[in-house]
Image (cartoon, rainbow, N blue to C red; front, top):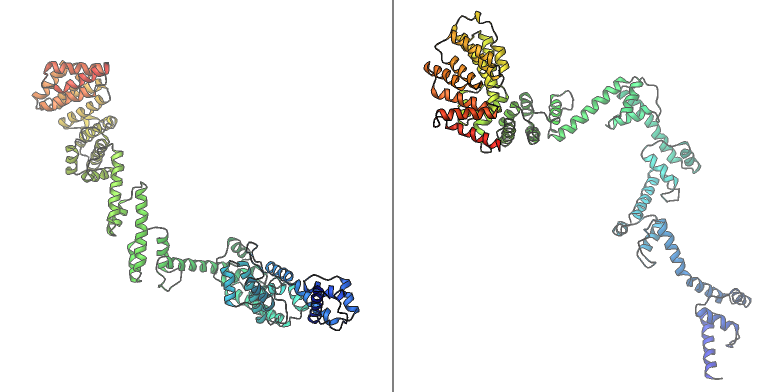
Length: 596
């Protein structure tokens, strides 16, 4: 026997020993048994004819060993399949890569077999972002707790998808079970859970009666747990706000007392919320009729508190509420100011009283800027005081005191004919008209008329002076009225009427310079400069100041609309006295520029 045959014989002998086949006497390496054992030892799967052969030769111990070994050979695939099934069942994310060798497999296996995990195992799932798996674990625990609570532990299935879990959750929230759910419990002989359910239902029916009495709805006949009434009363008892459709349903049922209770509860909820919002929770009274509720509503509507409100809050020891209210109202005023809204004097007084001086200053500067635009004062160097005070008074239609008038004169704001001057003159005219009505003193007529003229409203002056002079005894007053009336006619380019007034005024008061000054101006308006000078000289002889007469000449030239006539008047005056009337040169230049 050569070496190869000896080795094969030894190998066969070892295999027979390993697989407990020594009772098979043939030890020849050419034996069919040697082939079978060699295949098994190499992990090669056997065919049915090989298994049959072993049975025929009663090698049962060998068969059992082979079967176990063959089973182990497929174990890896079985583990993979089982792991895949558990991953799907417990919703392990597909992008979560893991193998049978990972810690996840024993966790899922334990969950499957014992229906519970330790806190550390749950934490491991959470750390790996397996939120769906964690949710299932929690549901399994919840299901187990509910089965314990409702004495349904004899029901073995622990899957959260099981119908019992849904039923027990309804029982736990005291929800009503459907007929089919009740029947399901009967069919599975879960009588303890049924008894608990029936106890709940009995308690709820008693609760319906109690709630109906509590919320003044006892006259309604419905006692069903599924009724709209019960749902509404439950909401009221849970301190929840009713929606419009629920209020409407109560109205249709005639449950007015229930509605009144609901409304009072809503007011109380609002009161509680307002107290929390405005730091007044320490005030215990919850009645909406309480004065504090009205105060908090006022604060919430961004309205400032009056003195009575403040006193109440002080007496109630609610200083934080006062501070919040003041800050909120000050913020509202500041927003108004920034957006260009003019705040009232009362609001400004409130800001000063509550020491919001920065907002007061902001309001003044914003208002000053708006008034300057309104009155055409573009000068950025114009100081706030006194001109802000002046314009505020004009806005309020209040007369200016002499000191403020002097300020306007110093800034030459009354002689320019701008909006501020026109407003001032109109206020003065209105004042003297009112004085005329109040006192009947007719010397207010020429004064008011003069101011109407300065306000560029000669029609008002003409209307005021349109009276029967025969009813005026004082000839000086008659003359003064005629002079201002004639000047108003002159303002309206009705020079013939103006001349008539001037002549009558001379008759009534021949020694006064005013009618003569008027006549001189009328002649200048008619471009009859020599005749005008005659009347001006007559006025000077009767006491008119030369400077005033020259100022009148200047006003006439300035107001002449016809460029050629203005040029003509300027030339006349310069020829008459070039030094005295040097200001007329500017009108020659203007005419020259316009002709280019």
